[in-house]
Length: 126
Image (cartoon, rainbow, N blue to C red; front, top):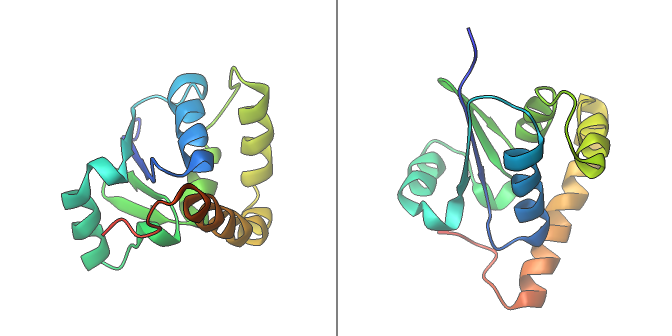
């Protein structure tokens, strides 16, 4: 049985936005829905109440499971096979390793904050 995925990201973050676009268009992951957290604040608030803060990383819903931050990126990258984008291929290879993801992910969170501050956009969604 195939899983259903919902990938929730910050649409104002240029890095998150580009990854989400690649995921949606080039990943060949079946049954995936991509949501901009800034356009789905009710969902973001309900996830925050459960302890999942999108300001600290993307959120991946897989059927009834919730993955957050590095774990969300690692989990979805493990589902990417034969992407039709060389950048997505590189990203998926890098983030299929839990160890590499845990090392690189904090840098991505900092890059997101810097990019949002540079754009004059709030780093907090709620």
